[in-house]
Length: 450
Ligand SMILES: NC(=O)C1=CN([C@@H]2O[C@H](COP(=O)(O)OP(=O)(O)OC[C@H]3O[C@@H](n4cnc5c(N)ncnc54)[C@H](O)[C@@H]3O)[C@@H](O)[C@H]2O)C=CC1
Ligand SMILES: O=C(O)[C@H]1O[C@H](OP(=O)(O)OP(=O)(O)OC[C@H]2O[C@@H](n3ccc(=O)[nH]c3=O)[C@H](O)[C@@H]2O)[C@H](O)[C@@H](O)[C@@H]1O
Image 1 (cartoon, rainbow, N blue to C red):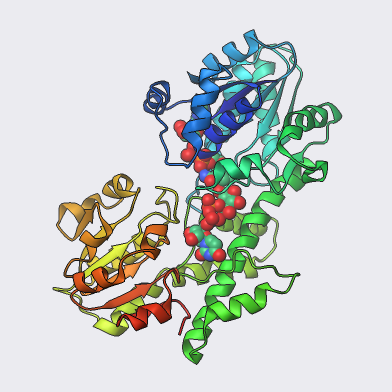
Image 2 (image 1 turned 90 degrees about the vertical axis):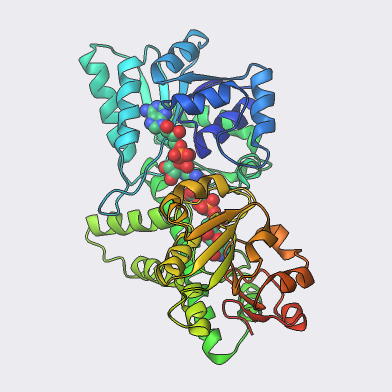
């Protein structure tokens, strides 16, 4: 099939490369010339395991090409197309000032699609968008076609994306489900044809109405965030009673109605989606007069949980950290990504520096991103970023682990103990084994662990 993907970010680039991998002809466009220059020279602008391999393969087989902007992209796709062009919108939907999803990029893309379209098309919203956005996109495209006095058949569908950063390729090729939101039989047939090669069982292809699909995305992310905030609250109770939250997690997760996934307590969830999507759903609820009691709680618990490590460090070491050196392991919001959006490391490092501490931090891949995020702290000498985990801990008064990278789990504990000035470890992801840590003579504090 002939496909245009608008946006070469996490979702757009992965979608484009994976669809091209199944012998669809895909043109991926972006408005950022720097991103395109990187892609043109064979570089991948983001850290995502396995992405380079499939982009390289699709490009060398000529199934995937890149263009600057929708106009160039549509011209190319339509020149090769005899059936309706599938146009995926995969642009950002950042948080607006009031917490709601900012649709300016989605609507600008829709406008330009309407201005440039010359052949029948199915426009597909892959971006995470509030209920009713497909209708707005339809209105925008139709208005542009009307102004051009063009009658071109088109439809708008919703096809939210559920991939996780760090496992994006695997998630795309082996999805739990693919949600296709459409009320149009022709659109449904085209979408099913496109996605059949990605599922082992047709039951994984869920076709629903457009609005239902839009809400499924927010409800899914909010449900996952709820599980995390819930377990974080349980971990805080565990702390008070001296109970091990890992045992509680196991016992709870063994109930088949609950299941074991996404119950790990820690120092709060981050990333580009959970924080913004929970807030956007709060606004969606409020906009129709529903008081989002549960969602507000999920968000408040997460904000509080992001202070967990700092509060425990201060409880152990005192409020004034002047002259203290704290090592931080992990900056990305989770392992296998260099994404630092809403990362818990940001709250911790800023709080530590504010309390007078000197911070030395390490992350296997997010150093470059961190240099921008913390430019002010680096400039005024409060924060140093280093290339090796053990370089961060050298002569530090304590270590705080914020991201559960595999290399931290296998760290040489004797070498770690020797490099630290004091053998104190705060583990914000319950990544290390408390028994082993204590055997090695560390003062070890996890989240809800004994
Ligand atoms: N990052 C993730 O893991 C996931 C994100 N999502 C959702 O997918 C959407 C996209 O997210 P990301 O890929 O992370 O965003 P991103 O910020 O990484 O990428 C968006 C890209 O769109 C480009 N763009 C903006 N306007 C454009 C236009 N008119 N024409 C061409 N390109 C344009 C930007 O330059 C940028 O490169 C969001 O709604 C997000 O909530 C959904 C599932 C997973
Ligand atoms: O809409 C999105 O963008 C995506 O958001 C999340 O994916 P992602 O943000 O990449 O990462 P997750 O693996 O879900 O982790 C999010 C945060 O939750 C935290 N987390 C996760 C699981 C857990 O048990 N406990 C926990 O604290 C992680 O440390 C991380 O900070 C969802 O998992 C994806 O399905 C969804 O497509």
